[in-house]
Image (cartoon, rainbow, N blue to C red; front, side):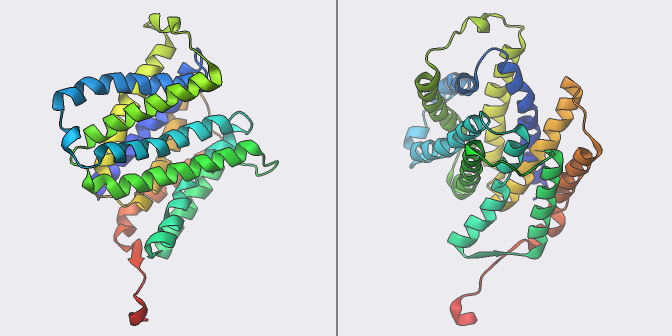
Length: 299
């Protein structure tokens, strides 16, 4: 378990820096085309590998699995982007992380699992940490907050779906590469509908922050980090993965300080500490997190 926790934490660190890279792309591109170009780059890099392997055609339902996974992933990104147009960054950051709560609640409803108090304690600690990190003020809820809630729900289904199909996927690389291709196709279509054609001339400046951001998001975040997620979730349950992914926020804050010189106040630091502690305690309570409800005849 510890190795896979490290892998998921590494993915969270990559996504944490992804906030910096995304901000770089926003210097030139709007959020719709930032996502579309990011996944288009990932798709273009994926195609030669997939054509060389030529094995995904023979693997049962991998195309369908990758397409469905891409819908959840795209929904996460799209609803968060749309939500940010009318809500605050603080509320968006907190509402998005509610996926960590939605996952066990959904699993309880549909799989009959029961979660121990130790796990709920870790979730509560992490969410309090997120509220402190985001300087959360719950007031004036609006349409953007509702869209961000849909983002959290979509993120929860993406993590749960990966957890369900991970053990059935022979090649995590092929699965994720196909997922990126589908997200790219859908993202470009949506960007064209909402924003129209994009001017690609800024990409000629290879030394610009926007290009560096797209390279990081397309190669490191989309191709490498999502592949690591599929590999690790072969062994890590979805509810634990959802908790570990909250590490993305402390990493984002760390990189924000190192790269953008953004400072955290004492409450922000306390929040980051609580999130980190909740993840560090997973190996301690990991074997005691869940238990199946007893069958009716055993009650």
